Amino acid sequence: MIAIDRAKTNKEKSCFYDESLVDNSSYKKNMEILHMVQEAIKEDRLIPYFQPIVHLLSQNVYKYEVLVRIIEKD
Image 1: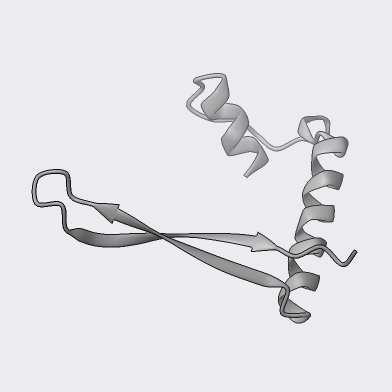
Image 2 (image 1 turned 120 degrees about the horizontal axis):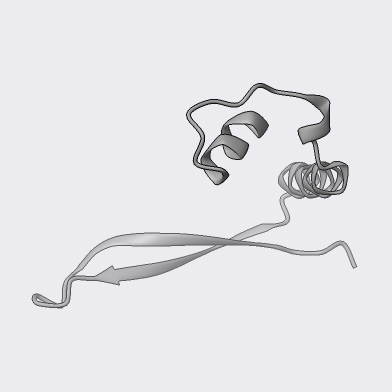
């Protein structure tokens, strides 16, 4: 994904993966978030919020968007 994202950002047709492409601070933050989400799932600390999507002409709800919040340990 790192090389693909780099190619898209720079509008290049291809990009080869290289260790220098890795942003360690971004990677570390992503890993912390992943761990927090995994832990919240295991401990059943997720709360879904359903938001209706309304068709403007008919005013009927035709689908829902689900937002999830994590309850912090403290």
